Image 1 (cartoon, helix red, strand yellow):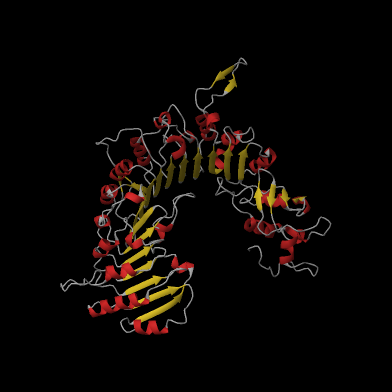
Image 2: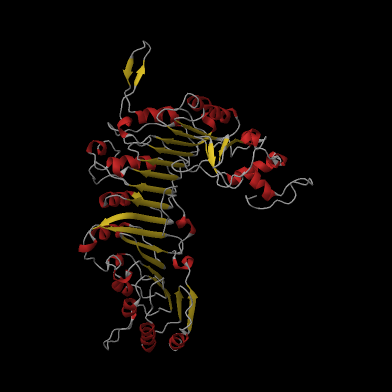
Length: 586
Protein backbone atom coordinates (compact mmCIF):
# COMPACT_ATOMS: atom_id res chain seq x y z
CA UNK A 1 0.00 0.00 0.00
CA UNK A 2 1.68 3.18 -1.15
CA UNK A 3 1.28 6.50 0.61
CA UNK A 4 -1.23 8.63 -1.22
CA UNK A 5 -3.58 5.79 -2.17
CA UNK A 6 -7.02 5.49 -0.62
CA UNK A 7 -7.80 2.50 1.52
CA UNK A 8 -11.35 1.12 1.30
CA UNK A 9 -12.29 -1.04 4.27
CA UNK A 10 -9.72 -0.91 7.03
CA UNK A 11 -11.62 1.82 8.84
CA UNK A 12 -15.18 0.59 8.92
CA UNK A 13 -16.41 2.75 11.82
CA UNK A 14 -18.76 5.57 10.80
CA UNK A 15 -16.52 8.12 12.51
CA UNK A 16 -13.41 6.93 10.76
CA UNK A 17 -11.76 9.39 8.42
CA UNK A 18 -10.61 8.59 4.94
CA UNK A 19 -7.15 7.18 4.49
CA UNK A 20 -6.13 10.34 2.68
CA UNK A 21 -7.06 12.39 5.74
CA UNK A 22 -5.06 10.06 7.93
CA UNK A 23 -2.06 10.71 5.74
CA UNK A 24 -2.36 14.39 6.50
CA UNK A 25 -2.97 13.84 10.19
CA UNK A 26 -0.20 11.32 10.65
CA UNK A 27 2.32 12.87 8.27
CA UNK A 28 2.77 9.72 6.25
CA UNK A 29 3.84 11.50 3.07
CA UNK A 30 7.36 10.08 2.87
CA UNK A 31 9.22 11.82 5.71
CA UNK A 32 12.97 11.29 5.74
CA UNK A 33 14.23 9.96 9.05
CA UNK A 34 17.67 10.56 10.53
CA UNK A 35 18.50 8.42 13.52
CA UNK A 36 21.54 10.50 14.38
CA UNK A 37 19.61 13.66 15.20
CA UNK A 38 16.38 11.83 16.11
CA UNK A 39 14.46 13.93 13.67
CA UNK A 40 12.83 13.81 10.28
CA UNK A 41 12.14 16.46 7.71
CA UNK A 42 8.70 16.56 6.17
CA UNK A 43 7.34 19.52 4.31
CA UNK A 44 3.87 18.00 4.48
CA UNK A 45 3.83 17.65 8.26
CA UNK A 46 0.77 19.68 9.18
CA UNK A 47 -1.25 18.62 12.16
CA UNK A 48 -2.06 20.01 15.56
CA UNK A 49 -1.42 18.56 19.01
CA UNK A 50 -4.86 19.63 20.08
CA UNK A 51 -6.64 17.61 17.40
CA UNK A 52 -7.85 14.06 17.81
CA UNK A 53 -5.34 11.63 16.35
CA UNK A 54 -7.29 9.21 14.19
CA UNK A 55 -4.11 7.37 13.26
CA UNK A 56 -4.59 5.36 16.46
CA UNK A 57 -7.66 3.79 14.89
CA UNK A 58 -5.42 1.93 12.49
CA UNK A 59 -4.13 -1.50 13.40
CA UNK A 60 -0.37 -1.80 14.05
CA UNK A 61 -0.05 -4.18 11.10
CA UNK A 62 -1.46 -1.57 8.74
CA UNK A 63 0.76 1.15 10.18
CA UNK A 64 3.79 -1.08 9.86
CA UNK A 65 3.02 -1.59 6.18
CA UNK A 66 2.56 2.15 5.74
CA UNK A 67 5.83 3.01 7.47
CA UNK A 68 7.66 0.54 5.26
CA UNK A 69 6.52 2.59 2.28
CA UNK A 70 7.25 6.03 3.67
CA UNK A 71 10.69 5.35 5.13
CA UNK A 72 13.54 6.06 2.75
CA UNK A 73 16.87 4.23 2.87
CA UNK A 74 19.71 5.97 4.63
CA UNK A 75 21.45 8.66 2.58
CA UNK A 76 25.00 8.36 1.24
CA UNK A 77 27.45 7.22 2.34
CA UNK A 78 25.21 4.92 4.37
CA UNK A 79 23.06 3.62 1.54
CA UNK A 80 21.30 0.30 1.35
CA UNK A 81 20.23 0.49 4.98
CA UNK A 82 16.88 0.85 6.64
CA UNK A 83 17.28 2.92 9.77
CA UNK A 84 15.68 2.84 13.18
CA UNK A 85 12.65 5.14 13.07
CA UNK A 86 13.27 8.32 14.97
CA UNK A 87 11.44 9.10 18.18
CA UNK A 88 10.83 12.64 16.97
CA UNK A 89 9.52 14.26 13.83
CA UNK A 90 10.75 17.68 12.86
CA UNK A 91 8.50 20.11 11.02
CA UNK A 92 8.86 23.70 10.02
CA UNK A 93 6.43 24.54 12.82
CA UNK A 94 7.32 22.49 15.88
CA UNK A 95 8.74 19.23 17.20
CA UNK A 96 6.20 16.61 18.12
CA UNK A 97 6.88 13.32 19.84
CA UNK A 98 5.73 10.38 17.79
CA UNK A 99 4.11 8.78 20.81
CA UNK A 100 1.64 11.66 20.65
CA UNK A 101 0.91 10.69 17.07
CA UNK A 102 0.72 6.93 17.37
CA UNK A 103 0.62 4.87 20.55
CA UNK A 104 1.68 1.79 18.59
CA UNK A 105 4.99 3.31 17.51
CA UNK A 106 7.31 1.25 19.71
CA UNK A 107 5.32 -1.92 19.07
CA UNK A 108 5.60 -1.35 15.34
CA UNK A 109 9.34 -0.73 15.52
CA UNK A 110 10.02 -3.78 17.66
CA UNK A 111 7.81 -6.16 15.71
CA UNK A 112 8.72 -5.03 12.20
CA UNK A 113 12.22 -6.27 11.37
CA UNK A 114 12.62 -4.02 8.34
CA UNK A 115 12.07 -1.02 10.60
CA UNK A 116 14.09 -2.03 13.64
CA UNK A 117 17.02 -4.07 12.43
CA UNK A 118 19.69 -1.40 11.97
CA UNK A 119 22.38 -0.33 14.40
CA UNK A 120 23.93 2.96 13.32
CA UNK A 121 26.89 3.65 15.59
CA UNK A 122 28.51 7.06 15.22
CA UNK A 123 29.68 9.86 17.43
CA UNK A 124 26.57 11.24 19.09
CA UNK A 125 24.32 8.28 18.34
CA UNK A 126 21.61 7.41 20.82
CA UNK A 127 22.70 4.37 22.82
CA UNK A 128 19.18 3.63 24.05
CA UNK A 129 17.94 3.18 20.50
CA UNK A 130 20.84 0.83 19.75
CA UNK A 131 20.03 -1.14 22.88
CA UNK A 132 16.39 -1.47 21.82
CA UNK A 133 17.50 -2.89 18.49
CA UNK A 134 19.88 -5.35 20.10
CA UNK A 135 17.16 -6.55 22.48
CA UNK A 136 15.19 -7.91 19.53
CA UNK A 137 17.21 -11.09 19.67
CA UNK A 138 15.54 -13.01 16.87
CA UNK A 139 15.96 -10.66 13.92
CA UNK A 140 18.94 -10.25 11.61
CA UNK A 141 20.82 -6.97 11.88
CA UNK A 142 22.32 -4.27 9.72
CA UNK A 143 25.26 -2.67 11.50
CA UNK A 144 26.87 0.58 10.41
CA UNK A 145 29.89 1.83 12.40
CA UNK A 146 30.84 5.36 11.41
CA UNK A 147 33.67 5.99 13.87
CA UNK A 148 37.14 4.62 14.59
CA UNK A 149 36.08 2.45 17.52
CA UNK A 150 32.64 0.97 18.15
CA UNK A 151 30.74 2.42 21.07
CA UNK A 152 30.57 0.50 24.38
CA UNK A 153 27.00 -0.40 23.47
CA UNK A 154 27.85 -1.81 20.05
CA UNK A 155 31.13 -3.56 20.82
CA UNK A 156 29.56 -6.40 22.86
CA UNK A 157 27.18 -7.05 19.98
CA UNK A 158 30.00 -8.40 17.84
CA UNK A 159 30.95 -10.95 20.48
CA UNK A 160 27.51 -12.02 21.63
CA UNK A 161 25.34 -11.37 18.57
CA UNK A 162 27.71 -11.44 15.61
CA UNK A 163 25.80 -14.42 14.26
CA UNK A 164 22.79 -12.11 13.69
CA UNK A 165 24.60 -9.55 11.50
CA UNK A 166 23.42 -9.66 7.90
CA UNK A 167 24.96 -6.39 6.64
CA UNK A 168 28.09 -4.77 8.08
CA UNK A 169 29.31 -1.36 6.97
CA UNK A 170 32.47 0.27 8.39
CA UNK A 171 33.27 3.89 7.63
CA UNK A 172 36.34 5.82 8.74
CA UNK A 173 36.47 9.56 9.40
CA UNK A 174 38.17 11.40 6.57
CA UNK A 175 40.65 13.28 8.76
CA UNK A 176 43.87 11.71 7.49
CA UNK A 177 46.06 13.35 10.16
CA UNK A 178 43.94 11.71 12.84
CA UNK A 179 43.92 8.44 10.98
CA UNK A 180 47.65 7.91 11.39
CA UNK A 181 47.96 8.96 15.02
CA UNK A 182 48.92 6.30 17.50
CA UNK A 183 46.45 6.04 20.30
CA UNK A 184 47.45 6.28 23.94
CA UNK A 185 45.76 3.54 25.92
CA UNK A 186 46.13 2.66 29.62
CA UNK A 187 47.83 -0.62 30.46
CA UNK A 188 47.41 -2.75 33.54
CA UNK A 189 49.67 -0.45 35.54
CA UNK A 190 47.74 2.67 34.61
CA UNK A 191 50.45 3.87 32.24
CA UNK A 192 49.85 4.82 28.66
CA UNK A 193 51.43 2.85 25.87
CA UNK A 194 51.35 3.30 22.13
CA UNK A 195 49.38 0.84 20.09
CA UNK A 196 51.35 -0.99 17.45
CA UNK A 197 48.79 -0.79 14.65
CA UNK A 198 47.21 2.17 12.87
CA UNK A 199 43.70 3.02 13.91
CA UNK A 200 42.21 1.53 10.76
CA UNK A 201 43.50 -1.95 11.52
CA UNK A 202 42.40 -1.69 15.15
CA UNK A 203 38.98 -0.63 13.93
CA UNK A 204 38.76 -3.49 11.45
CA UNK A 205 39.93 -5.98 14.06
CA UNK A 206 37.40 -4.84 16.66
CA UNK A 207 34.53 -4.96 14.18
CA UNK A 208 35.40 -8.27 12.52
CA UNK A 209 36.76 -10.40 15.37
CA UNK A 210 33.83 -12.80 15.48
CA UNK A 211 32.49 -15.68 13.39
CA UNK A 212 29.98 -14.15 10.97
CA UNK A 213 27.79 -17.10 10.09
CA UNK A 214 24.93 -14.96 8.67
CA UNK A 215 26.90 -12.09 7.11
CA UNK A 216 26.07 -11.52 3.43
CA UNK A 217 27.20 -7.94 2.70
CA UNK A 218 30.36 -6.25 3.97
CA UNK A 219 31.51 -2.72 3.08
CA UNK A 220 34.63 -0.93 4.30
CA UNK A 221 35.42 2.68 3.48
CA UNK A 222 38.83 3.33 5.00
CA UNK A 223 41.83 5.58 4.74
CA UNK A 224 45.20 4.55 3.38
CA UNK A 225 47.37 2.75 5.92
CA UNK A 226 51.11 3.38 6.04
CA UNK A 227 53.54 0.61 6.81
CA UNK A 228 51.76 -2.03 4.77
CA UNK A 229 50.67 -3.79 2.79
CA UNK A 230 48.42 -5.57 5.28
CA UNK A 231 46.46 -8.77 4.77
CA UNK A 232 44.26 -9.26 7.86
CA UNK A 233 42.06 -12.30 8.43
CA UNK A 234 38.45 -11.24 8.93
CA UNK A 235 35.66 -12.84 10.98
CA UNK A 236 37.96 -15.48 12.44
CA UNK A 237 38.07 -16.92 8.94
CA UNK A 238 34.39 -17.85 9.13
CA UNK A 239 31.97 -15.96 6.87
CA UNK A 240 30.41 -18.77 4.83
CA UNK A 241 27.46 -16.71 3.53
CA UNK A 242 29.32 -13.55 2.44
CA UNK A 243 28.09 -12.60 -1.02
CA UNK A 244 29.21 -9.00 -1.59
CA UNK A 245 32.39 -7.25 -0.53
CA UNK A 246 33.15 -3.57 -1.20
CA UNK A 247 36.53 -2.09 -0.25
CA UNK A 248 36.69 1.66 -0.83
CA UNK A 249 40.01 3.53 -0.55
CA UNK A 250 41.45 0.34 0.85
CA UNK A 251 45.19 -0.36 0.71
CA UNK A 252 44.73 -3.75 2.38
CA UNK A 253 43.22 -7.03 1.26
CA UNK A 254 41.60 -9.81 3.31
CA UNK A 255 43.53 -13.02 3.77
CA UNK A 256 40.27 -14.98 3.73
CA UNK A 257 38.90 -17.31 1.10
CA UNK A 258 35.25 -16.33 0.66
CA UNK A 259 33.68 -19.35 -1.00
CA UNK A 260 30.22 -17.78 -1.42
CA UNK A 261 31.38 -14.33 -2.58
CA UNK A 262 29.71 -13.31 -5.85
CA UNK A 263 30.23 -9.51 -6.01
CA UNK A 264 33.57 -7.79 -5.44
CA UNK A 265 34.17 -4.03 -5.63
CA UNK A 266 37.64 -2.58 -4.92
CA UNK A 267 38.53 1.08 -5.34
CA UNK A 268 41.79 2.71 -4.31
CA UNK A 269 41.67 6.37 -3.37
CA UNK A 270 42.97 8.34 -6.31
CA UNK A 271 43.36 11.59 -4.36
CA UNK A 272 44.83 10.28 -1.13
CA UNK A 273 47.23 7.64 -2.38
CA UNK A 274 48.22 7.96 -6.00
CA UNK A 275 50.74 10.80 -5.67
CA UNK A 276 52.06 9.97 -2.19
CA UNK A 277 54.97 7.57 -2.60
CA UNK A 278 55.01 6.19 1.00
CA UNK A 279 51.35 5.28 0.60
CA UNK A 280 51.88 3.83 -2.85
CA UNK A 281 54.46 1.48 -1.35
CA UNK A 282 51.90 0.38 1.25
CA UNK A 283 49.39 -0.87 -1.32
CA UNK A 284 48.89 -4.56 -1.95
CA UNK A 285 50.55 -5.91 -5.07
CA UNK A 286 48.75 -7.22 -8.13
CA UNK A 287 49.72 -10.90 -7.66
CA UNK A 288 48.20 -10.77 -4.18
CA UNK A 289 44.95 -9.52 -5.71
CA UNK A 290 44.93 -12.58 -7.96
CA UNK A 291 45.50 -14.84 -4.97
CA UNK A 292 42.55 -13.28 -3.17
CA UNK A 293 40.26 -13.54 -6.19
CA UNK A 294 41.30 -17.14 -6.79
CA UNK A 295 40.08 -17.89 -3.26
CA UNK A 296 36.62 -16.65 -4.26
CA UNK A 297 35.70 -19.20 -6.96
CA UNK A 298 32.06 -18.12 -7.27
CA UNK A 299 32.70 -14.50 -8.23
CA UNK A 300 30.16 -13.26 -10.76
CA UNK A 301 30.75 -9.48 -10.74
CA UNK A 302 34.16 -7.84 -10.29
CA UNK A 303 34.67 -4.07 -10.38
CA UNK A 304 38.20 -2.69 -9.95
CA UNK A 305 38.68 1.09 -9.87
CA UNK A 306 41.78 3.30 -9.61
CA UNK A 307 43.95 0.23 -9.27
CA UNK A 308 47.68 0.96 -9.28
CA UNK A 309 50.68 -0.85 -7.88
CA UNK A 310 54.22 0.00 -6.86
CA UNK A 311 55.10 -3.56 -7.80
CA UNK A 312 57.01 -3.98 -11.04
CA UNK A 313 54.91 -5.88 -13.54
CA UNK A 314 56.68 -9.15 -14.34
CA UNK A 315 55.92 -12.09 -16.55
CA UNK A 316 55.59 -15.62 -15.29
CA UNK A 317 52.72 -15.01 -12.87
CA UNK A 318 50.06 -17.70 -13.42
CA UNK A 319 46.62 -16.52 -14.48
CA UNK A 320 43.40 -17.35 -12.67
CA UNK A 321 40.12 -18.65 -14.07
CA UNK A 322 36.85 -17.39 -12.63
CA UNK A 323 34.44 -19.86 -14.16
CA UNK A 324 31.28 -18.07 -13.00
CA UNK A 325 32.40 -14.54 -13.88
CA UNK A 326 29.66 -12.62 -15.69
CA UNK A 327 30.70 -8.97 -15.49
CA UNK A 328 34.16 -7.42 -15.21
CA UNK A 329 34.84 -3.70 -15.02
CA UNK A 330 38.25 -2.05 -14.78
CA UNK A 331 38.34 1.73 -14.56
CA UNK A 332 40.75 4.57 -13.87
CA UNK A 333 43.87 2.39 -14.12
CA UNK A 334 47.04 2.77 -16.15
CA UNK A 335 47.09 0.83 -19.38
CA UNK A 336 49.89 -1.41 -18.07
CA UNK A 337 47.74 -2.42 -15.10
CA UNK A 338 44.69 -3.00 -17.33
CA UNK A 339 46.80 -5.03 -19.74
CA UNK A 340 48.23 -7.14 -16.90
CA UNK A 341 44.82 -7.82 -15.39
CA UNK A 342 43.27 -8.78 -18.72
CA UNK A 343 46.12 -11.21 -19.34
CA UNK A 344 45.86 -12.80 -15.91
CA UNK A 345 42.07 -13.06 -15.44
CA UNK A 346 40.62 -15.72 -17.70
CA UNK A 347 37.09 -14.71 -18.67
CA UNK A 348 34.65 -17.55 -19.44
CA UNK A 349 33.12 -17.77 -22.88
CA UNK A 350 29.58 -17.16 -21.60
CA UNK A 351 30.37 -13.84 -19.89
CA UNK A 352 27.75 -11.08 -19.87
CA UNK A 353 29.77 -7.85 -19.93
CA UNK A 354 33.32 -6.54 -19.87
CA UNK A 355 33.90 -2.83 -19.53
CA UNK A 356 37.13 -0.82 -19.53
CA UNK A 357 36.57 2.75 -18.33
CA UNK A 358 38.58 5.97 -18.28
CA UNK A 359 41.36 4.83 -20.59
CA UNK A 360 43.59 7.87 -21.06
CA UNK A 361 44.58 7.97 -24.72
CA UNK A 362 47.39 9.91 -26.33
CA UNK A 363 48.03 10.77 -29.95
CA UNK A 364 47.64 7.83 -32.29
CA UNK A 365 45.48 5.73 -30.00
CA UNK A 366 48.35 3.39 -29.14
CA UNK A 367 46.69 2.50 -25.83
CA UNK A 368 43.61 1.21 -27.63
CA UNK A 369 45.70 -0.78 -30.08
CA UNK A 370 47.20 -2.63 -27.13
CA UNK A 371 44.02 -3.14 -25.10
CA UNK A 372 41.36 -3.97 -27.70
CA UNK A 373 42.92 -7.29 -28.83
CA UNK A 374 43.08 -8.42 -25.17
CA UNK A 375 39.32 -8.16 -24.69
CA UNK A 376 37.14 -11.24 -25.23
CA UNK A 377 36.11 -11.94 -28.78
CA UNK A 378 32.43 -11.79 -29.69
CA UNK A 379 30.45 -11.55 -32.92
CA UNK A 380 28.52 -8.32 -32.29
CA UNK A 381 25.23 -7.49 -33.90
CA UNK A 382 24.96 -4.00 -32.39
CA UNK A 383 27.46 -1.18 -31.94
CA UNK A 384 27.06 1.99 -29.93
CA UNK A 385 29.29 5.05 -30.33
CA UNK A 386 28.62 7.87 -27.90
CA UNK A 387 30.48 11.08 -27.22
CA UNK A 388 31.23 11.85 -23.58
CA UNK A 389 32.31 15.13 -22.04
CA UNK A 390 35.98 14.33 -22.56
CA UNK A 391 36.16 11.35 -24.86
CA UNK A 392 34.18 8.53 -26.37
CA UNK A 393 32.30 5.47 -25.15
CA UNK A 394 32.11 2.53 -27.56
CA UNK A 395 30.18 -0.67 -26.91
CA UNK A 396 29.46 -3.78 -28.93
CA UNK A 397 26.96 -6.51 -28.08
CA UNK A 398 25.81 -9.84 -29.31
CA UNK A 399 22.74 -11.73 -28.14
CA UNK A 400 24.12 -12.36 -24.65
CA UNK A 401 27.33 -10.36 -24.10
CA UNK A 402 28.58 -6.80 -24.16
CA UNK A 403 32.03 -5.21 -24.38
CA UNK A 404 32.54 -1.52 -23.68
CA UNK A 405 35.51 0.85 -23.74
CA UNK A 406 35.37 4.41 -22.44
CA UNK A 407 38.24 6.65 -23.49
CA UNK A 408 39.51 9.95 -22.16
CA UNK A 409 41.49 12.34 -24.32
CA UNK A 410 44.69 13.65 -22.76
CA UNK A 411 44.96 16.63 -25.13
CA UNK A 412 42.02 16.99 -27.51
CA UNK A 413 43.61 19.90 -29.35
CA UNK A 414 46.59 17.89 -30.59
CA UNK A 415 45.12 14.48 -31.32
CA UNK A 416 45.62 12.69 -34.60
CA UNK A 417 43.76 9.42 -34.26
CA UNK A 418 44.08 6.27 -36.27
CA UNK A 419 40.57 6.13 -37.77
CA UNK A 420 40.46 2.34 -38.03
CA UNK A 421 41.37 1.58 -34.40
CA UNK A 422 37.93 0.02 -33.76
CA UNK A 423 38.49 -2.32 -36.70
CA UNK A 424 40.67 -4.33 -34.31
CA UNK A 425 37.33 -5.79 -33.26
CA UNK A 426 35.51 -8.16 -35.60
CA UNK A 427 32.66 -5.92 -36.74
CA UNK A 428 31.63 -7.65 -39.95
CA UNK A 429 28.37 -8.89 -38.42
CA UNK A 430 27.16 -5.57 -36.97
CA UNK A 431 23.63 -4.84 -38.19
CA UNK A 432 22.69 -1.91 -35.92
CA UNK A 433 24.78 1.20 -35.30
CA UNK A 434 23.95 4.01 -32.87
CA UNK A 435 25.81 7.31 -33.26
CA UNK A 436 25.10 9.59 -30.30
CA UNK A 437 26.95 12.87 -30.03
CA UNK A 438 26.92 16.33 -28.58
CA UNK A 439 28.70 18.05 -31.44
CA UNK A 440 29.63 16.40 -34.73
CA UNK A 441 30.26 12.87 -33.58
CA UNK A 442 30.82 12.00 -37.24
CA UNK A 443 34.18 13.80 -37.25
CA UNK A 444 35.20 12.68 -33.76
CA UNK A 445 38.79 11.41 -33.94
CA UNK A 446 38.08 8.65 -31.46
CA UNK A 447 35.27 7.30 -33.58
CA UNK A 448 36.76 7.38 -37.09
CA UNK A 449 33.23 7.08 -38.50
CA UNK A 450 34.25 7.33 -42.17
CA UNK A 451 36.53 4.30 -41.95
CA UNK A 452 34.28 2.57 -39.45
CA UNK A 453 31.35 2.49 -41.88
CA UNK A 454 33.53 0.63 -44.37
CA UNK A 455 33.94 -2.14 -41.80
CA UNK A 456 30.16 -2.75 -41.52
CA UNK A 457 29.03 -4.56 -44.69
CA UNK A 458 25.89 -6.01 -43.06
CA UNK A 459 24.69 -2.81 -41.39
CA UNK A 460 20.93 -2.50 -41.87
CA UNK A 461 19.84 0.03 -39.21
CA UNK A 462 21.53 3.33 -38.38
CA UNK A 463 20.38 5.66 -35.60
CA UNK A 464 21.83 9.17 -35.47
CA UNK A 465 21.40 11.81 -32.81
CA UNK A 466 23.63 14.87 -32.66
CA UNK A 467 23.37 18.62 -32.39
CA UNK A 468 25.11 18.84 -35.76
CA UNK A 469 23.10 18.05 -38.91
CA UNK A 470 23.93 14.67 -40.48
CA UNK A 471 25.15 16.17 -43.77
CA UNK A 472 28.61 14.65 -43.45
CA UNK A 473 27.08 11.29 -42.61
CA UNK A 474 25.11 11.45 -45.88
CA UNK A 475 28.38 12.00 -47.74
CA UNK A 476 30.03 9.05 -46.03
CA UNK A 477 27.14 6.74 -46.95
CA UNK A 478 26.82 7.89 -50.56
CA UNK A 479 28.40 5.98 -53.47
CA UNK A 480 31.78 7.23 -54.70
CA UNK A 481 31.56 10.02 -57.25
CA UNK A 482 33.75 8.17 -59.72
CA UNK A 483 32.47 5.44 -61.98
CA UNK A 484 34.22 2.53 -60.29
CA UNK A 485 32.06 -0.53 -59.65
CA UNK A 486 32.36 -0.03 -55.89
CA UNK A 487 28.99 0.62 -54.34
CA UNK A 488 28.27 2.76 -51.29
CA UNK A 489 29.43 1.78 -47.80
CA UNK A 490 26.96 -0.35 -45.87
CA UNK A 491 25.18 -1.71 -48.97
CA UNK A 492 22.47 -3.40 -46.88
CA UNK A 493 21.43 -0.23 -45.04
CA UNK A 494 17.63 -0.12 -45.11
CA UNK A 495 16.53 1.84 -42.02
CA UNK A 496 17.71 5.32 -41.07
CA UNK A 497 16.51 7.05 -37.94
CA UNK A 498 17.50 10.67 -37.31
CA UNK A 499 16.68 12.53 -34.10
CA UNK A 500 16.69 16.29 -34.44
CA UNK A 501 17.30 17.99 -31.06
CA UNK A 502 16.08 21.46 -30.26
CA UNK A 503 17.96 24.13 -32.17
CA UNK A 504 19.10 21.78 -34.94
CA UNK A 505 17.86 22.14 -38.51
CA UNK A 506 17.65 19.21 -40.88
CA UNK A 507 18.78 19.94 -44.42
CA UNK A 508 15.94 18.26 -46.32
CA UNK A 509 17.40 18.79 -49.81
CA UNK A 510 20.57 16.95 -48.74
CA UNK A 511 18.52 14.14 -47.22
CA UNK A 512 16.47 13.80 -50.41
CA UNK A 513 19.61 13.88 -52.53
CA UNK A 514 21.18 11.21 -50.34
CA UNK A 515 18.20 8.85 -50.62
CA UNK A 516 18.02 9.45 -54.35
CA UNK A 517 21.71 8.67 -54.79
CA UNK A 518 21.39 5.43 -52.82
CA UNK A 519 18.29 4.44 -54.80
CA UNK A 520 19.91 5.10 -58.19
CA UNK A 521 22.95 3.08 -57.11
CA UNK A 522 20.70 0.11 -56.42
CA UNK A 523 20.83 0.37 -52.61
CA UNK A 524 17.63 2.19 -51.64
CA UNK A 525 16.51 2.86 -48.09
CA UNK A 526 13.39 1.04 -46.95
CA UNK A 527 12.41 3.29 -44.03
CA UNK A 528 13.39 6.77 -42.84
CA UNK A 529 12.21 7.93 -39.41
CA UNK A 530 12.61 11.58 -38.44
CA UNK A 531 12.08 12.78 -34.88
CA UNK A 532 11.55 16.50 -34.34
CA UNK A 533 10.91 18.54 -31.25
CA UNK A 534 7.39 18.99 -32.55
CA UNK A 535 5.63 18.06 -35.75
CA UNK A 536 6.19 20.69 -38.39
CA UNK A 537 3.20 21.56 -40.53
CA UNK A 538 5.18 22.61 -43.59
CA UNK A 539 7.00 19.35 -44.27
CA UNK A 540 4.34 17.62 -46.35
CA UNK A 541 5.96 18.58 -49.63
CA UNK A 542 9.41 17.45 -48.47
CA UNK A 543 8.04 14.16 -47.18
CA UNK A 544 6.23 13.58 -50.46
CA UNK A 545 9.46 14.09 -52.39
CA UNK A 546 11.34 11.86 -49.94
CA UNK A 547 8.71 9.17 -50.44
CA UNK A 548 9.70 8.97 -54.07
CA UNK A 549 12.91 7.19 -53.08
CA UNK A 550 11.97 5.66 -49.70
CA UNK A 551 9.18 3.15 -49.18
CA UNK A 552 8.21 4.34 -45.68
CA UNK A 553 8.71 7.83 -44.25
CA UNK A 554 7.75 8.42 -40.63
CA UNK A 555 7.62 11.67 -38.67
CA UNK A 556 7.63 11.53 -34.88
CA UNK A 557 7.48 14.08 -32.16
CA UNK A 558 10.78 14.36 -30.39
CA UNK A 559 10.83 13.02 -26.84
CA UNK A 560 13.71 12.59 -24.45
CA UNK A 561 12.95 8.94 -23.77
CA UNK A 562 13.49 7.74 -27.31
CA UNK A 563 16.20 10.28 -27.98
CA UNK A 564 18.37 8.96 -25.19
CA UNK A 565 19.19 6.04 -27.47
CA UNK A 566 19.97 3.50 -24.81
CA UNK A 567 21.88 0.64 -26.28
CA UNK A 568 19.76 -2.54 -26.46
CA UNK A 569 22.06 -4.80 -24.45
CA UNK A 570 21.29 -7.99 -22.53
CA UNK A 571 19.47 -7.40 -19.27
CA UNK A 572 22.41 -8.68 -17.24
CA UNK A 573 24.61 -6.00 -18.76
CA UNK A 574 22.47 -3.13 -17.53
CA UNK A 575 22.87 -3.94 -13.86
CA UNK A 576 25.30 -2.06 -11.66
CA UNK A 577 28.11 -3.85 -9.94
CA UNK A 578 27.86 -1.73 -6.84
CA UNK A 579 25.81 1.01 -5.33
CA UNK A 580 28.36 3.46 -6.66
CA UNK A 581 29.22 1.57 -9.81
CA UNK A 582 28.60 2.67 -13.39
CA UNK A 583 25.91 1.23 -15.63
CA UNK A 584 27.14 -1.79 -17.51
CA UNK A 585 27.14 -1.84 -21.26
CA UNK A 586 26.07 1.77 -21.75
